[in-house]
Image: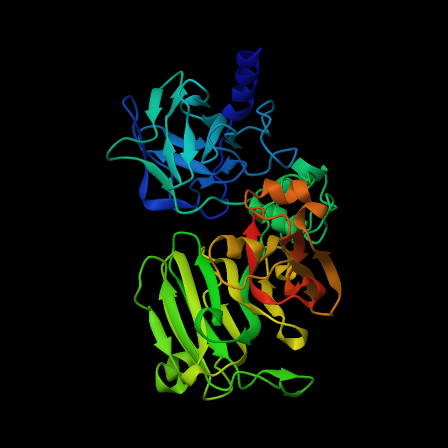
Length: 485
């Protein structure tokens, strides 16, 4: 039956195979050749105007061989808006199909046609495919009249500069093929969230997740800066802020130690730390990566260029490009000074793949204004107008610090998550009281039943984690904010 279809299509096409200009080819201008022993070299860029376009769902355009003429890979307009059916003279071509068993590859499957050579098969036997790590073709195509065509060898191969996402005729940021696959029409736009997972259609498209499946989601928002405020004392009770640079790339950050400029209700906060001193350490290295007392004494130009320079000369700041790893910022008072201080870490290179993975801040949890306050900003994601969500685990620890040898540990912490409007989103005293299964599923539940934890998915915005002691208890506590998948 398949051969009958191909013969019929060949008759329909044999009259003419006009070369019409398509979208600009994305084939590399150097690595543009396949080779067949019976036909020689075949140029996938063709004449530059009509070359092949490798796309997310289909190919289109023309290959040219000096010995065989033009080969049509498809016209770029499949009848169903997604992929060629290869069942009619107007709807044939080579499709690209995501390989579910090898996520980093697309299959090439279907038929190309040349008036001088007939059909060229892209099928399982030769396993032609695109390797997405370098957009390079692998495998073989076959033509009954011309034999095998090698898409790559050590010296000659076909490579794309990029993979074309496809047409977006309604201009909503979602390609037509993607909309047809998941919705059957072009009636959706980027702002919709049909599965209610907090990531809109545009984010799901960019993340290559399924917009109608709540379990298929990538949390695209990220922590842009993290900050913790508490009363800075001396010795073991200074402010200790830990954070992680994740990913594989270095990240440029600014760490600030704030005291004199802390305000409450528009006035200087009573009991604030008058002269903070900042030290930055990397795990495994006893020597500091950097230290600073008054920020204008070193790196003034770099710090001012960040746009978040401290407002008081007595405050401290360090700008560094940090490799992935664990870091600790220690804030103390000059000459043993005490008072309410704030440590902050800002991401200065948000587009890079590395991100602030979590903050863990340890210090003395007091009463009233001197409780522990951990603030963080969730920056924009991949959705419309940079919308997106982040899934977080927030922990408040105390008893386990005592078990690890920390003196005067907070005996029974409570935890509250508050948004920028002052609304309490969640609260917890003993972590097993609520969300036990979710917290255990993270793999990092608190080790003591009296400690507190919250799992929450939040959208972009400003948030605060507040740690207090039950019945106004005081002691050394630890607040942590983890990004979860």
